[in-house]
Length: 574
Picture: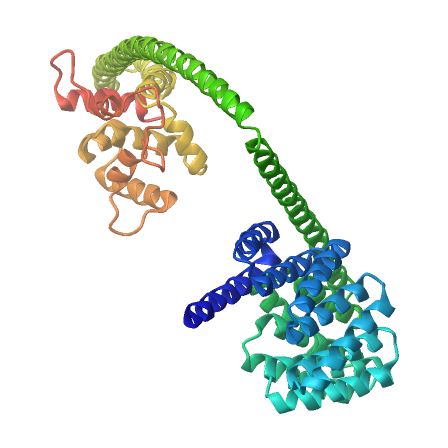
Protein backbone atom coordinates (compact mmCIF):
# COMPACT_ATOMS: atom_id res chain seq x y z
CA UNK A 1 0.00 0.00 0.00
CA UNK A 2 2.87 2.35 0.83
CA UNK A 3 4.54 1.53 -2.49
CA UNK A 4 1.29 2.25 -4.40
CA UNK A 5 0.86 5.57 -2.58
CA UNK A 6 4.45 6.57 -3.41
CA UNK A 7 3.95 5.65 -7.08
CA UNK A 8 0.71 7.64 -7.22
CA UNK A 9 2.43 10.66 -5.64
CA UNK A 10 5.23 10.43 -8.23
CA UNK A 11 2.71 10.30 -11.09
CA UNK A 12 0.89 13.33 -9.68
CA UNK A 13 4.15 15.29 -9.35
CA UNK A 14 5.06 14.48 -12.95
CA UNK A 15 1.58 15.53 -14.11
CA UNK A 16 1.92 18.87 -12.32
CA UNK A 17 5.34 19.38 -13.91
CA UNK A 18 3.80 18.80 -17.35
CA UNK A 19 0.99 21.22 -16.50
CA UNK A 20 3.53 23.87 -15.41
CA UNK A 21 5.38 23.55 -18.74
CA UNK A 22 2.10 23.67 -20.63
CA UNK A 23 0.79 26.75 -18.82
CA UNK A 24 3.06 29.23 -20.65
CA UNK A 25 1.97 28.33 -24.19
CA UNK A 26 -1.49 26.82 -23.69
CA UNK A 27 -2.95 28.15 -20.43
CA UNK A 28 -6.50 27.02 -21.21
CA UNK A 29 -5.40 23.41 -21.81
CA UNK A 30 -3.16 23.53 -18.73
CA UNK A 31 -6.07 24.80 -16.63
CA UNK A 32 -8.34 21.97 -17.78
CA UNK A 33 -5.60 19.43 -17.08
CA UNK A 34 -4.95 20.77 -13.58
CA UNK A 35 -8.69 20.86 -12.84
CA UNK A 36 -8.89 17.16 -13.66
CA UNK A 37 -6.03 16.46 -11.23
CA UNK A 38 -7.69 18.70 -8.64
CA UNK A 39 -11.02 16.87 -8.91
CA UNK A 40 -9.25 13.53 -8.56
CA UNK A 41 -7.36 14.77 -5.47
CA UNK A 42 -10.60 16.05 -3.89
CA UNK A 43 -12.35 12.74 -4.64
CA UNK A 44 -9.44 10.79 -3.05
CA UNK A 45 -9.12 13.26 -0.15
CA UNK A 46 -5.45 13.86 -1.10
CA UNK A 47 -4.95 17.24 0.57
CA UNK A 48 -1.33 17.77 -0.42
CA UNK A 49 -2.03 17.11 -4.12
CA UNK A 50 -5.08 19.35 -3.81
CA UNK A 51 -2.87 22.13 -2.47
CA UNK A 52 -0.29 21.55 -5.24
CA UNK A 53 -3.02 21.83 -7.88
CA UNK A 54 -4.37 25.06 -6.35
CA UNK A 55 -0.82 26.43 -6.28
CA UNK A 56 -0.32 25.56 -9.95
CA UNK A 57 -3.58 27.26 -10.90
CA UNK A 58 -2.44 30.34 -8.99
CA UNK A 59 0.89 30.38 -10.84
CA UNK A 60 -0.97 29.93 -14.13
CA UNK A 61 -3.03 33.06 -13.46
CA UNK A 62 0.15 34.86 -12.35
CA UNK A 63 1.85 34.14 -15.68
CA UNK A 64 -1.26 35.43 -17.47
CA UNK A 65 -1.19 38.69 -15.48
CA UNK A 66 -4.36 37.93 -13.45
CA UNK A 67 -2.78 38.73 -10.09
CA UNK A 68 -6.00 38.91 -8.04
CA UNK A 69 -7.08 35.39 -9.07
CA UNK A 70 -3.51 34.14 -8.62
CA UNK A 71 -3.43 35.45 -5.03
CA UNK A 72 -6.81 33.83 -4.31
CA UNK A 73 -5.68 30.35 -5.40
CA UNK A 74 -2.29 30.66 -3.68
CA UNK A 75 -4.03 31.62 -0.42
CA UNK A 76 -6.26 28.55 -0.76
CA UNK A 77 -3.16 26.38 -1.25
CA UNK A 78 -1.47 28.05 1.74
CA UNK A 79 -4.46 27.24 3.93
CA UNK A 80 -4.31 23.56 2.93
CA UNK A 81 -0.53 23.28 3.50
CA UNK A 82 -0.92 24.87 6.91
CA UNK A 83 -3.70 22.42 7.82
CA UNK A 84 -1.55 19.38 6.93
CA UNK A 85 1.56 20.94 8.57
CA UNK A 86 3.70 20.62 5.44
CA UNK A 87 6.39 23.23 6.10
CA UNK A 88 8.31 22.80 2.82
CA UNK A 89 5.22 23.23 0.65
CA UNK A 90 4.05 26.15 2.83
CA UNK A 91 7.41 27.95 2.56
CA UNK A 92 7.55 27.43 -1.22
CA UNK A 93 4.00 28.73 -1.55
CA UNK A 94 4.93 31.82 0.48
CA UNK A 95 7.80 32.53 -1.89
CA UNK A 96 5.39 32.28 -4.86
CA UNK A 97 2.77 34.38 -3.08
CA UNK A 98 5.37 37.03 -2.19
CA UNK A 99 6.37 37.30 -5.86
CA UNK A 100 2.74 37.79 -6.93
CA UNK A 101 2.19 40.39 -4.19
CA UNK A 102 5.25 42.28 -5.40
CA UNK A 103 4.05 42.45 -9.01
CA UNK A 104 0.61 43.42 -7.74
CA UNK A 105 2.32 46.43 -6.07
CA UNK A 106 1.74 45.13 -2.55
CA UNK A 107 5.36 45.43 -1.45
CA UNK A 108 4.79 45.08 2.32
CA UNK A 109 2.80 41.88 1.93
CA UNK A 110 5.43 40.55 -0.48
CA UNK A 111 8.30 41.17 1.99
CA UNK A 112 6.22 39.57 4.78
CA UNK A 113 5.75 36.38 2.76
CA UNK A 114 9.46 36.23 1.91
CA UNK A 115 10.40 36.76 5.58
CA UNK A 116 8.07 33.95 6.78
CA UNK A 117 9.52 31.60 4.16
CA UNK A 118 13.05 32.59 5.26
CA UNK A 119 12.19 31.84 8.90
CA UNK A 120 11.05 28.30 8.10
CA UNK A 121 14.02 27.50 5.86
CA UNK A 122 16.41 28.83 8.51
CA UNK A 123 14.88 26.53 11.12
CA UNK A 124 14.95 23.49 8.82
CA UNK A 125 18.42 24.33 7.48
CA UNK A 126 17.14 23.93 3.93
CA UNK A 127 20.01 25.46 1.94
CA UNK A 128 18.20 25.30 -1.41
CA UNK A 129 15.13 27.01 0.04
CA UNK A 130 17.31 29.62 1.75
CA UNK A 131 19.12 30.35 -1.53
CA UNK A 132 15.88 30.88 -3.37
CA UNK A 133 14.35 33.05 -0.62
CA UNK A 134 17.48 35.21 -0.24
CA UNK A 135 17.50 35.66 -4.03
CA UNK A 136 13.84 36.77 -3.98
CA UNK A 137 14.51 39.27 -1.19
CA UNK A 138 17.61 40.57 -2.99
CA UNK A 139 15.61 41.00 -6.19
CA UNK A 140 12.93 42.82 -4.18
CA UNK A 141 15.48 45.34 -2.85
CA UNK A 142 17.07 45.74 -6.27
CA UNK A 143 13.73 46.80 -7.77
CA UNK A 144 13.39 49.31 -4.92
CA UNK A 145 16.87 50.61 -5.88
CA UNK A 146 18.36 49.63 -2.51
CA UNK A 147 21.41 48.12 -4.18
CA UNK A 148 23.42 47.55 -0.99
CA UNK A 149 20.68 45.43 0.58
CA UNK A 150 20.11 43.70 -2.74
CA UNK A 151 23.81 42.80 -3.00
CA UNK A 152 23.91 41.51 0.61
CA UNK A 153 20.98 39.14 0.12
CA UNK A 154 22.22 37.93 -3.25
CA UNK A 155 25.59 37.08 -1.66
CA UNK A 156 23.76 35.12 1.04
CA UNK A 157 21.80 33.34 -1.68
CA UNK A 158 25.04 32.57 -3.51
CA UNK A 159 26.58 31.09 -0.37
CA UNK A 160 23.63 28.72 0.24
CA UNK A 161 23.28 27.75 -3.43
CA UNK A 162 26.96 26.83 -3.49
CA UNK A 163 26.39 24.27 -0.73
CA UNK A 164 23.66 22.49 -2.67
CA UNK A 165 25.43 22.55 -6.06
CA UNK A 166 22.17 23.85 -7.53
CA UNK A 167 23.52 25.06 -10.88
CA UNK A 168 20.15 26.41 -12.05
CA UNK A 169 19.77 28.43 -8.86
CA UNK A 170 23.39 29.59 -9.05
CA UNK A 171 22.82 30.77 -12.61
CA UNK A 172 19.85 32.90 -11.50
CA UNK A 173 21.81 34.37 -8.56
CA UNK A 174 24.82 35.20 -10.75
CA UNK A 175 22.48 36.93 -13.19
CA UNK A 176 20.92 38.95 -10.33
CA UNK A 177 24.40 39.98 -9.11
CA UNK A 178 25.32 41.02 -12.65
CA UNK A 179 22.16 43.15 -12.80
CA UNK A 180 23.08 44.84 -9.50
CA UNK A 181 26.59 45.72 -10.72
CA UNK A 182 25.11 46.92 -14.00
CA UNK A 183 22.83 49.27 -12.06
CA UNK A 184 25.90 50.46 -10.16
CA UNK A 185 27.66 51.02 -13.54
CA UNK A 186 30.42 48.62 -12.48
CA UNK A 187 30.41 46.92 -15.86
CA UNK A 188 33.48 44.71 -15.43
CA UNK A 189 31.95 43.02 -12.39
CA UNK A 190 28.59 42.83 -14.14
CA UNK A 191 30.21 41.11 -17.14
CA UNK A 192 31.97 38.64 -14.82
CA UNK A 193 28.75 37.54 -13.12
CA UNK A 194 26.80 37.44 -16.38
CA UNK A 195 29.50 35.26 -17.91
CA UNK A 196 29.32 32.85 -14.95
CA UNK A 197 25.53 32.77 -15.23
CA UNK A 198 25.78 31.98 -18.97
CA UNK A 199 28.24 29.14 -18.34
CA UNK A 200 25.95 27.54 -15.74
CA UNK A 201 22.84 27.94 -17.91
CA UNK A 202 24.68 26.19 -20.74
CA UNK A 203 25.56 23.33 -18.41
CA UNK A 204 21.91 22.96 -17.37
CA UNK A 205 20.72 23.38 -20.99
CA UNK A 206 18.52 26.30 -19.97
CA UNK A 207 18.25 27.77 -23.47
CA UNK A 208 15.61 30.34 -22.49
CA UNK A 209 17.80 31.63 -19.67
CA UNK A 210 20.78 31.81 -22.01
CA UNK A 211 18.93 34.19 -24.31
CA UNK A 212 18.31 36.71 -21.50
CA UNK A 213 21.89 36.47 -20.21
CA UNK A 214 23.36 36.95 -23.70
CA UNK A 215 21.14 40.00 -24.10
CA UNK A 216 22.47 41.37 -20.81
CA UNK A 217 26.07 40.82 -21.98
CA UNK A 218 25.22 42.73 -25.14
CA UNK A 219 23.99 45.61 -22.95
CA UNK A 220 27.31 45.61 -21.06
CA UNK A 221 29.34 45.81 -24.27
CA UNK A 222 27.10 48.57 -25.61
CA UNK A 223 27.32 50.62 -22.41
CA UNK A 224 31.11 50.34 -22.39
CA UNK A 225 31.44 51.53 -25.99
CA UNK A 226 32.24 48.11 -27.49
CA UNK A 227 29.42 48.39 -29.97
CA UNK A 228 30.51 45.68 -32.40
CA UNK A 229 30.79 43.02 -29.69
CA UNK A 230 27.53 44.18 -28.21
CA UNK A 231 25.90 43.87 -31.61
CA UNK A 232 27.26 40.34 -31.98
CA UNK A 233 25.83 39.31 -28.60
CA UNK A 234 22.46 40.86 -29.34
CA UNK A 235 22.28 39.12 -32.70
CA UNK A 236 23.21 35.82 -31.04
CA UNK A 237 20.35 36.32 -28.60
CA UNK A 238 18.07 37.21 -31.51
CA UNK A 239 18.92 33.99 -33.36
CA UNK A 240 18.37 31.82 -30.25
CA UNK A 241 15.05 33.56 -29.58
CA UNK A 242 13.95 32.96 -33.19
CA UNK A 243 14.86 29.27 -32.92
CA UNK A 244 12.97 28.85 -29.66
CA UNK A 245 10.13 31.18 -30.75
CA UNK A 246 10.53 33.28 -27.59
CA UNK A 247 8.76 36.50 -28.52
CA UNK A 248 9.64 38.43 -25.34
CA UNK A 249 13.36 37.74 -25.67
CA UNK A 250 13.26 38.38 -29.44
CA UNK A 251 11.62 41.75 -28.85
CA UNK A 252 14.29 42.61 -26.26
CA UNK A 253 17.04 41.58 -28.71
CA UNK A 254 15.55 43.78 -31.46
CA UNK A 255 15.37 46.69 -29.04
CA UNK A 256 19.01 46.25 -27.94
CA UNK A 257 20.21 46.00 -31.56
CA UNK A 258 18.32 49.23 -32.36
CA UNK A 259 20.04 50.98 -29.41
CA UNK A 260 23.45 49.80 -30.62
CA UNK A 261 22.85 51.00 -34.18
CA UNK A 262 21.67 54.36 -32.84
CA UNK A 263 24.93 54.74 -30.89
CA UNK A 264 26.85 53.70 -34.02
CA UNK A 265 25.15 56.55 -35.93
CA UNK A 266 23.20 54.18 -38.17
CA UNK A 267 19.68 55.56 -37.74
CA UNK A 268 18.16 53.56 -40.63
CA UNK A 269 19.18 50.21 -39.12
CA UNK A 270 18.19 51.42 -35.66
CA UNK A 271 14.76 52.42 -36.92
CA UNK A 272 14.30 49.06 -38.70
CA UNK A 273 14.99 46.99 -35.59
CA UNK A 274 12.98 49.33 -33.41
CA UNK A 275 10.00 48.86 -35.73
CA UNK A 276 10.50 45.09 -35.57
CA UNK A 277 10.48 45.28 -31.78
CA UNK A 278 7.29 47.33 -31.79
CA UNK A 279 5.58 44.98 -34.24
CA UNK A 280 6.61 42.01 -32.11
CA UNK A 281 5.29 43.71 -28.97
CA UNK A 282 1.95 44.20 -30.73
CA UNK A 283 2.01 40.55 -31.77
CA UNK A 284 2.84 39.46 -28.21
CA UNK A 285 0.00 41.57 -26.89
CA UNK A 286 -2.42 40.01 -29.38
CA UNK A 287 -1.28 36.46 -28.56
CA UNK A 288 -1.43 37.06 -24.82
CA UNK A 289 -4.83 38.66 -25.21
CA UNK A 290 -6.09 35.62 -27.11
CA UNK A 291 -4.65 33.32 -24.47
CA UNK A 292 -6.34 35.25 -21.70
CA UNK A 293 -9.62 35.18 -23.60
CA UNK A 294 -9.26 31.42 -24.08
CA UNK A 295 -8.47 30.99 -20.39
CA UNK A 296 -11.46 33.08 -19.36
CA UNK A 297 -13.65 31.04 -21.71
CA UNK A 298 -12.30 27.87 -20.13
CA UNK A 299 -13.02 29.24 -16.66
CA UNK A 300 -16.53 30.06 -17.72
CA UNK A 301 -17.04 26.60 -19.21
CA UNK A 302 -15.68 24.87 -16.11
CA UNK A 303 -17.78 26.98 -13.76
CA UNK A 304 -20.82 26.40 -15.94
CA UNK A 305 -20.24 22.65 -15.84
CA UNK A 306 -19.77 22.77 -12.06
CA UNK A 307 -23.03 24.66 -11.79
CA UNK A 308 -24.78 22.14 -14.00
CA UNK A 309 -23.44 19.29 -11.91
CA UNK A 310 -24.77 20.99 -8.78
CA UNK A 311 -28.17 21.41 -10.39
CA UNK A 312 -28.25 17.78 -11.45
CA UNK A 313 -27.37 16.68 -7.93
CA UNK A 314 -30.21 18.82 -6.62
CA UNK A 315 -32.63 17.33 -9.14
CA UNK A 316 -31.75 13.83 -8.05
CA UNK A 317 -33.37 14.54 -4.68
CA UNK A 318 -36.77 14.81 -6.31
CA UNK A 319 -37.46 11.30 -7.63
CA UNK A 320 -40.89 11.97 -9.03
CA UNK A 321 -39.77 15.01 -10.99
CA UNK A 322 -36.73 13.13 -12.27
CA UNK A 323 -38.86 10.20 -13.46
CA UNK A 324 -41.37 12.51 -15.12
CA UNK A 325 -38.60 14.49 -16.80
CA UNK A 326 -36.98 11.27 -17.99
CA UNK A 327 -40.25 10.05 -19.54
CA UNK A 328 -40.77 13.39 -21.25
CA UNK A 329 -37.21 13.40 -22.51
CA UNK A 330 -37.61 9.87 -23.87
CA UNK A 331 -40.81 10.85 -25.64
CA UNK A 332 -39.16 13.91 -27.07
CA UNK A 333 -36.21 11.82 -28.17
CA UNK A 334 -38.60 9.38 -29.87
CA UNK A 335 -40.39 12.19 -31.66
CA UNK A 336 -37.10 13.80 -32.56
CA UNK A 337 -35.78 10.46 -33.82
CA UNK A 338 -38.90 9.99 -35.97
CA UNK A 339 -38.49 13.52 -37.36
CA UNK A 340 -34.80 12.95 -38.00
CA UNK A 341 -35.49 9.63 -39.77
CA UNK A 342 -38.20 11.24 -41.89
CA UNK A 343 -35.95 14.17 -42.79
CA UNK A 344 -33.09 11.79 -43.53
CA UNK A 345 -35.24 9.79 -45.93
CA UNK A 346 -36.38 13.00 -47.61
CA UNK A 347 -32.78 14.10 -47.83
CA UNK A 348 -31.81 10.78 -49.44
CA UNK A 349 -34.60 11.10 -52.02
CA UNK A 350 -33.56 14.67 -52.77
CA UNK A 351 -29.93 13.61 -53.14
CA UNK A 352 -30.93 10.82 -55.52
CA UNK A 353 -32.96 13.25 -57.63
CA UNK A 354 -30.06 15.70 -57.56
CA UNK A 355 -27.61 12.98 -58.61
CA UNK A 356 -29.88 12.01 -61.50
CA UNK A 357 -30.14 15.64 -62.56
CA UNK A 358 -26.36 16.00 -62.33
CA UNK A 359 -25.95 12.91 -64.52
CA UNK A 360 -28.28 14.43 -67.12
CA UNK A 361 -26.32 17.67 -67.00
CA UNK A 362 -23.08 15.76 -67.36
CA UNK A 363 -24.45 13.80 -70.32
CA UNK A 364 -25.62 17.02 -71.99
CA UNK A 365 -22.28 18.71 -71.37
CA UNK A 366 -20.48 15.69 -72.78
CA UNK A 367 -22.59 15.83 -75.94
CA UNK A 368 -21.91 19.55 -76.27
CA UNK A 369 -18.19 18.90 -75.89
CA UNK A 370 -18.38 16.24 -78.63
CA UNK A 371 -20.17 18.70 -80.94
CA UNK A 372 -17.58 21.38 -80.15
CA UNK A 373 -14.80 18.91 -80.86
CA UNK A 374 -16.35 18.02 -84.23
CA UNK A 375 -16.67 21.73 -85.03
CA UNK A 376 -13.00 22.18 -84.23
CA UNK A 377 -12.11 19.27 -86.49
CA UNK A 378 -14.26 20.71 -89.31
CA UNK A 379 -12.67 24.10 -88.81
CA UNK A 380 -9.22 22.54 -89.01
CA UNK A 381 -10.19 20.68 -92.19
CA UNK A 382 -11.49 23.97 -93.64
CA UNK A 383 -8.25 25.73 -92.80
CA UNK A 384 -6.29 22.90 -94.42
CA UNK A 385 -8.43 23.22 -97.56
CA UNK A 386 -7.89 26.99 -97.62
CA UNK A 387 -4.14 26.50 -97.28
CA UNK A 388 -4.08 23.96 -100.10
CA UNK A 389 -6.12 26.39 -102.25
CA UNK A 390 -3.65 29.19 -101.54
CA UNK A 391 -0.79 26.85 -102.42
CA UNK A 392 -2.46 26.07 -105.76
CA UNK A 393 -3.02 29.79 -106.34
CA UNK A 394 0.67 30.45 -105.74
CA UNK A 395 1.63 27.69 -108.15
CA UNK A 396 -0.87 28.91 -110.78
CA UNK A 397 0.35 32.49 -110.40
CA UNK A 398 3.93 31.33 -110.78
CA UNK A 399 3.05 29.38 -113.93
CA UNK A 400 1.30 32.41 -115.38
CA UNK A 401 4.44 34.46 -114.84
CA UNK A 402 6.45 31.67 -116.42
CA UNK A 403 4.26 31.67 -119.55
CA UNK A 404 4.40 35.47 -119.85
CA UNK A 405 8.17 35.55 -119.42
CA UNK A 406 8.62 32.72 -121.91
CA UNK A 407 6.82 34.77 -124.57
CA UNK A 408 8.81 37.89 -123.72
CA UNK A 409 12.07 35.93 -123.70
CA UNK A 410 11.38 34.48 -127.16
CA UNK A 411 10.38 37.93 -128.43
CA UNK A 412 13.49 39.47 -127.01
CA UNK A 413 15.69 36.81 -128.62
CA UNK A 414 14.05 37.38 -132.02
CA UNK A 415 14.44 41.11 -131.74
CA UNK A 416 18.07 40.73 -130.74
CA UNK A 417 18.67 38.70 -133.89
CA UNK A 418 17.05 41.44 -135.96
CA UNK A 419 19.29 44.01 -134.32
CA UNK A 420 22.31 42.09 -135.43
CA UNK A 421 21.16 42.58 -139.02
CA UNK A 422 22.74 45.48 -140.89
CA UNK A 423 19.49 47.02 -141.99
CA UNK A 424 19.75 50.48 -140.56
CA UNK A 425 16.18 51.65 -141.27
CA UNK A 426 14.64 49.15 -138.76
CA UNK A 427 17.38 49.24 -136.19
CA UNK A 428 16.16 52.23 -134.19
CA UNK A 429 12.59 50.96 -133.97
CA UNK A 430 13.67 47.49 -132.97
CA UNK A 431 16.00 48.89 -130.34
CA UNK A 432 13.09 50.75 -128.74
CA UNK A 433 11.08 47.51 -128.66
CA UNK A 434 13.93 45.70 -126.92
CA UNK A 435 14.15 48.49 -124.31
CA UNK A 436 10.43 48.23 -123.63
CA UNK A 437 10.66 44.48 -123.21
CA UNK A 438 13.69 44.89 -120.92
CA UNK A 439 11.78 47.49 -118.94
CA UNK A 440 8.92 45.03 -118.64
CA UNK A 441 11.33 42.54 -117.03
CA UNK A 442 12.26 45.03 -114.35
CA UNK A 443 8.74 45.82 -113.18
CA UNK A 444 7.76 44.54 -109.73
CA UNK A 445 4.07 44.05 -110.32
CA UNK A 446 4.31 40.28 -110.60
CA UNK A 447 6.71 40.13 -107.67
CA UNK A 448 4.14 41.99 -105.56
CA UNK A 449 1.40 39.53 -106.57
CA UNK A 450 3.74 36.60 -105.97
CA UNK A 451 4.66 37.96 -102.54
CA UNK A 452 1.00 38.48 -101.57
CA UNK A 453 0.10 34.85 -102.34
CA UNK A 454 3.35 33.63 -100.73
CA UNK A 455 2.47 35.42 -97.47
CA UNK A 456 -0.98 33.84 -97.47
CA UNK A 457 0.70 30.43 -97.50
CA UNK A 458 3.42 31.52 -95.04
CA UNK A 459 1.78 34.23 -92.85
CA UNK A 460 4.06 36.89 -91.38
CA UNK A 461 7.15 35.19 -92.85
CA UNK A 462 8.60 38.33 -94.47
CA UNK A 463 7.50 40.58 -91.61
CA UNK A 464 9.20 38.43 -88.95
CA UNK A 465 12.25 38.03 -91.17
CA UNK A 466 12.73 41.79 -91.64
CA UNK A 467 12.07 42.46 -87.94
CA UNK A 468 14.82 40.07 -86.90
CA UNK A 469 17.16 40.95 -89.80
CA UNK A 470 16.48 44.58 -90.83
CA UNK A 471 19.57 44.74 -93.13
CA UNK A 472 18.11 42.34 -95.75
CA UNK A 473 17.65 43.80 -99.25
CA UNK A 474 14.89 43.02 -101.75
CA UNK A 475 17.31 40.75 -103.62
CA UNK A 476 17.98 38.87 -100.37
CA UNK A 477 14.25 38.51 -99.79
CA UNK A 478 13.72 37.01 -103.26
CA UNK A 479 16.57 34.57 -102.77
CA UNK A 480 15.09 33.53 -99.40
CA UNK A 481 11.64 33.05 -100.99
CA UNK A 482 13.09 30.73 -103.65
CA UNK A 483 15.01 28.76 -100.99
CA UNK A 484 11.81 28.54 -98.99
CA UNK A 485 10.16 26.86 -102.02
CA UNK A 486 12.91 24.18 -102.01
CA UNK A 487 14.21 25.19 -105.49
CA UNK A 488 17.65 23.87 -106.36
CA UNK A 489 20.68 26.17 -106.55
CA UNK A 490 20.99 25.86 -110.38
CA UNK A 491 17.33 26.79 -110.84
CA UNK A 492 17.66 29.66 -108.38
CA UNK A 493 20.58 31.07 -110.40
CA UNK A 494 18.51 30.82 -113.59
CA UNK A 495 15.50 32.50 -111.96
CA UNK A 496 17.62 35.39 -110.67
CA UNK A 497 19.49 35.69 -113.98
CA UNK A 498 22.91 35.25 -112.39
CA UNK A 499 25.68 32.68 -112.60
CA UNK A 500 26.16 29.90 -110.08
CA UNK A 501 29.31 31.62 -108.80
CA UNK A 502 27.36 34.84 -108.22
CA UNK A 503 24.69 32.78 -106.47
CA UNK A 504 27.35 31.25 -104.21
CA UNK A 505 28.57 34.75 -103.31
CA UNK A 506 24.99 35.88 -102.69
CA UNK A 507 24.37 32.88 -100.42
CA UNK A 508 27.61 33.59 -98.54
CA UNK A 509 26.61 37.22 -97.95
CA UNK A 510 23.14 36.15 -96.88
CA UNK A 511 24.62 33.70 -94.35
CA UNK A 512 26.67 36.54 -92.83
CA UNK A 513 23.61 38.77 -92.57
CA UNK A 514 21.66 35.97 -90.89
CA UNK A 515 24.54 35.32 -88.49
CA UNK A 516 24.84 31.58 -89.31
CA UNK A 517 27.76 29.60 -87.98
CA UNK A 518 30.14 27.70 -90.23
CA UNK A 519 28.61 24.38 -91.20
CA UNK A 520 25.04 25.44 -90.46
CA UNK A 521 22.66 24.91 -93.42
CA UNK A 522 21.14 28.09 -94.90
CA UNK A 523 18.17 26.21 -96.42
CA UNK A 524 17.46 24.40 -93.15
CA UNK A 525 17.57 27.69 -91.25
CA UNK A 526 15.06 29.29 -93.65
CA UNK A 527 12.73 26.28 -93.39
CA UNK A 528 12.91 26.42 -89.57
CA UNK A 529 12.25 30.16 -89.59
CA UNK A 530 8.60 29.49 -90.47
CA UNK A 531 8.19 28.53 -86.80
CA UNK A 532 8.40 30.72 -83.71
CA UNK A 533 11.12 30.34 -81.12
CA UNK A 534 8.82 28.28 -78.91
CA UNK A 535 8.24 25.71 -81.67
CA UNK A 536 4.65 26.77 -82.54
CA UNK A 537 3.56 28.05 -85.97
CA UNK A 538 3.65 31.80 -86.37
CA UNK A 539 0.04 31.73 -87.57
CA UNK A 540 -1.94 29.81 -84.92
CA UNK A 541 -5.02 29.61 -87.22
CA UNK A 542 -3.23 27.31 -89.75
CA UNK A 543 -2.48 23.74 -88.57
CA UNK A 544 1.14 22.65 -88.44
CA UNK A 545 0.73 19.89 -91.04
CA UNK A 546 -0.82 22.31 -93.53
CA UNK A 547 1.94 24.89 -93.11
CA UNK A 548 4.61 22.28 -93.72
CA UNK A 549 2.86 20.76 -96.73
CA UNK A 550 2.59 24.21 -98.31
CA UNK A 551 6.36 24.35 -98.82
CA UNK A 552 6.22 21.98 -101.84
CA UNK A 553 3.86 22.96 -104.65
CA UNK A 554 2.42 20.41 -107.08
CA UNK A 555 1.89 21.90 -110.56
CA UNK A 556 -1.62 22.10 -111.98
CA UNK A 557 -0.33 21.90 -115.61
CA UNK A 558 2.57 19.84 -116.97
CA UNK A 559 5.43 22.36 -117.17
CA UNK A 560 9.09 21.36 -116.90
CA UNK A 561 11.18 22.47 -113.93
CA UNK A 562 13.52 24.48 -116.14
CA UNK A 563 10.61 26.34 -117.71
CA UNK A 564 9.19 27.08 -114.22
CA UNK A 565 12.56 28.29 -113.02
CA UNK A 566 13.12 30.57 -115.98
CA UNK A 567 9.61 32.00 -115.66
CA UNK A 568 9.88 32.70 -111.94
CA UNK A 569 13.34 34.19 -112.51
CA UNK A 570 11.92 36.83 -114.82
CA UNK A 571 9.78 38.02 -111.91
CA UNK A 572 12.44 37.86 -109.24
CA UNK A 573 15.48 39.34 -111.02
CA UNK A 574 14.54 42.80 -109.80
